[in-house]
Each structure stands twice: as structure tokens, then as C-alpha cells.
Length: 139
Length: 139
Length: 139
Image 1 (tube, rainbow over the protein chains, first blue to last red):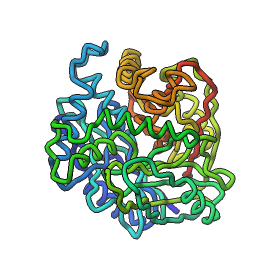
Image 2: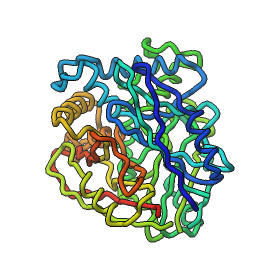
Image 3: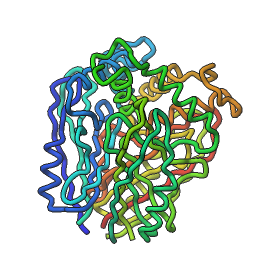
Image 4: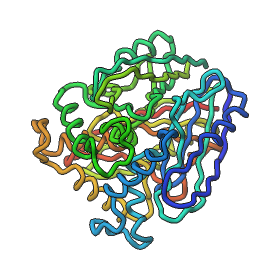
């Protein structure tokens, strides 16, 4: 049994879903671990992780529209506005989605379903540099 | 240290929570692993996983009513409607709940609390065949 | 490769975020495991786990205000009211946040970002005794 760790750097280009499936898959394959558990952990509280459909881009736009309506930028409910009208909504969106994902690896492959992609969800309007810690244990 | 993996097939009978606690527990026990970490990963983006109260069925009905109000079927906000009025709401519900759950195993048992059950949450109105990948590492 | 397990007892003082970062960090460090995966699992369905910003207390108050508006206590939508107007909202809040979190350990440290703290989110108005199962695997 052995482990591998890595920090994945993702430059986001603004609010929305940024697919990281291929980067994660390549790193996992390169580890040579055939059976194991892969964990992704995002080191931020205004961006998050999500497994979503990778087939129809409408799904991603609709999800973004839903969250924009549920947690509106500049909502007067929020006190924490010093870093901009999208800062507190970003924290709420992150709380409602995932900070961490673990995915089994079987026969050298992530067990993702046919239509599943791995996404970093940037919740701030301006893109920035994000870090996702990867950990893989298995053999 | 060793690992076990399995695909759990669940035939859902329509929208709502389908309990999988016993199936997961039986598989975990059969592995013979006394101390470890069990991971469930659902291979779909219109169904999800949830730990919820298994005592009072009202809790499950109330949760379903809440989600039906929060993410209404046929909401004109959504573009992605080709697969039916419940398709995009299913993706949103899945994003707001869990794709994956990991549960420690101690003394041969999942550390679930007294009132906790493991559920597959079907978000499409029509039931279908769902797959949950199980992974257990320990000794 | 080895494992460590523990039950963390947290006495909550009422609804809101209770930071557990230091308690978790101390236990992880004491295990002597330098590279591994730490998992937290809360054994309740009316409290949950969350990674959130630990810098500005406004963020935590705003998140609480958002959830109080999204899932109002005493909402007539809910049938399950025997245990009080905050009981069913607590289950919904738990479903929308996390029951479990896994965090990689690298060079003897949790890979939390600079502003990330680990929180137990108590969703009942009255505080109570809560249990978080900890599991660490690595070497």
C-alpha cells in the first residue's frame, strides 16, 4: 500500500465551473496505483468542488443561474461586503456545495459515471489562482 | 492493510430517499475489515447520497417537500428541459446534496449514529437503475 | 501504513458554528502520521460539518442569517414539528451542508488553506453533546 500527494494549480477565468477531470485523471494514472481512493480538497472558502454532467453546457449555465438567484450578489442581508458584493455569496455557495471529494480508483481508473466530470466551481466574479490538494492511497 | 471494492445496484421506484444502510453494512461486514474507511460514490448527476434520520418517515417527506419548493420542476429559469421538467432540478438537487460519503469503520461496524441511515436520493420522477461504487480500505 | 480512530466530543452552546480545528489538529499531530488522509464524520442528522473562513466573524453570522432565511424555523411546510420548530429545519440544513469531511495530511500537517477552519455546525437552537468520529490512515 502506498500514497501519492500533489497540489493542482488552477487559474480560474471568472465565476463558473472549470473542468479538472483530465488533469486529475492524468495525475492518478501516472501514480501507477490501480486500486485505491483519490481525494480532492480545495484550499479556499470562496470556491468549491462539484461533480456534474459534462455533456450539455446548458446544465452548467442553469446551475449557475440557480445559484445566482438563490444567493444574490449584494444581498442586503449580508454584512460582510468589504471585499465586494460577490464575496459573501461566494462563501455561501461554497458551503452549499463541496470542499472535498473522494473517488474510488478501480482497475487503474476513477469510477466516474459516463456523464460525470470533476469541476472546480469559482464563486468570485474575478478569476484567481486556486489550489486543490490531491491525495491517493492504494496499490 | 487491504482493500475491497464493489458496485451496488439500486433500482429506484421514483423520486425520494431509498435506504441502502443494510446493503452497505452487509457488504462491509463481509469484507472482514475491522478498522477502516468505507467510501460510497454515486455514478450519476441526477441522484445523490445523503445521511438522514431513519426513525420518523415525516423527516424524509418534509425534506422532499423543501427541495421541491426550493428547486421547482419546470422552473422557467432553466434552459435544459429536453429530458423533462424534472431533469435540471435533479442536477441542482444533486449539487446541493452529496455525490460521495466516507464513513469510518471501527470494531467491525460503521460509526453511524443511532438515528442515521444511508440513503440514495433519486431526484428524477421516474425510477431507474443506479450504481453506487463502494470502496473499503483497512485491516 | 497504519490507522488511528477517535471520538471527539463537542458540547455546543446553541445554534451556530463551533470551531474544532485545533482539537482535530492536535489529535492528528499526536498520531505521528506524516502523510495520510484524515476523515471527520458527525454522528447526528441535526448538526453538520463545514470548512469555512476563520478570519472574519461576520462571515459566520452572514452564513447563519442566510440559512435562517432559506430554511425558516416553524415553516408551515413541515409536518415534523413534535421536537420543536427548529427540528426539521435542522435536518434540512444538515442535508445542505456536510456530514463528513476528508482532509489530506502532508508533511505532518492538514492541508487546510490559510483562512480555512473546521467547524461543527449546530443547527438546533439549544446546544447539546455532539460526537464527531475521526479516522486517520497513513504513515
